[in-house]
Length: 111
Image (cartoon, rainbow, N blue to C red):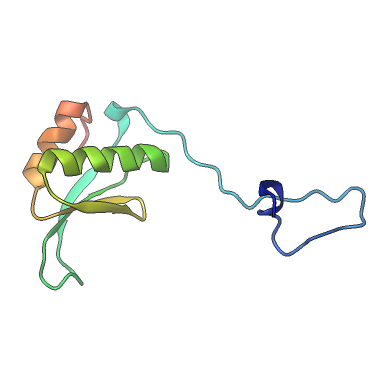
C-alpha cells in the first residue's frame, strides 16, 4: 500500500466526487523558547518496585525536541531513562543535577 493510502481509515473508495479524505493526524505544538518553558522536576517511585525515577514534565513542544532534551539529560547524568507520554524519565534521584543541567541549557523556569 502506498504512503498516501495509509491514513484513510476504513474508507477505501468513494463514488462521491466531492469526498475529501480527512487525515486524523493531530497538529504538533510549536516548541516554546527555553526561557518560557515551565518544566517541573519531581521524584517518583510509584509502581516502580521502590526504584526512584526523576521526572521532567510540562514540556511544551514537538516530540523530536522532547526526545533530544531527554537524550541530553540522560547523557549528562550518565544513566538510562526514556521519554514517554510527554515526560522525561531519568533512572535514579537526579533532581539537583537535572535542574543544574536545565539551567545551563537556558531553561530558567525549571522547578
